[in-house]
Image (cartoon, rainbow, N blue to C red; front, top):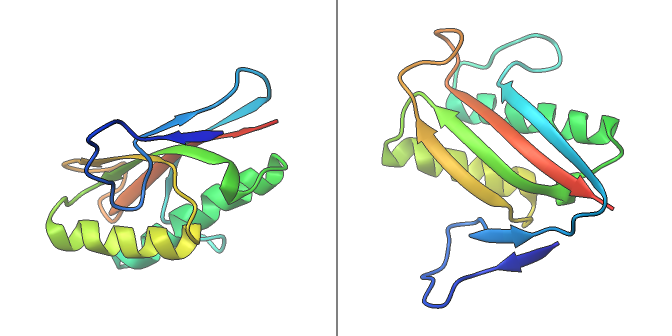
Amino acid sequence: MRHIEAKGDHGSAGYSQAIEVSASGRRLIIAGQVGVDADGKLPEDLAGQTRACFRNIFDLLEAADMAPANLVRHVVYATASDKETLKTYRVVRDEMMAGHQMTATFVGVKALAHPRLLIEIEAEAVAE
């Protein structure tokens, strides 16, 4: 896996612009994970739901004999896309990812599958 930045790139806020992955190996595509924790509880706040999303992703990685360092891509769907929402998301992402960077797309949406859901994250991981 190799991180690639384009000439003149102004830097990214905690994510890679591109990641090159060899064609051999395993690829795990993770469906959108919502902020429901292992006990079936849904935190009321964005930070709590974001942590639960990442924990759910980490559980799936572990089940596939992978780790957070294998993540190469994620797409975030959030019911708000203001500066405070983005800041909260980034703080939790950085905390959960412990310095590992992957490609990222953040999409503001009108609603998710349940009215209390604030965020959903899908991801992709690769391993040799």
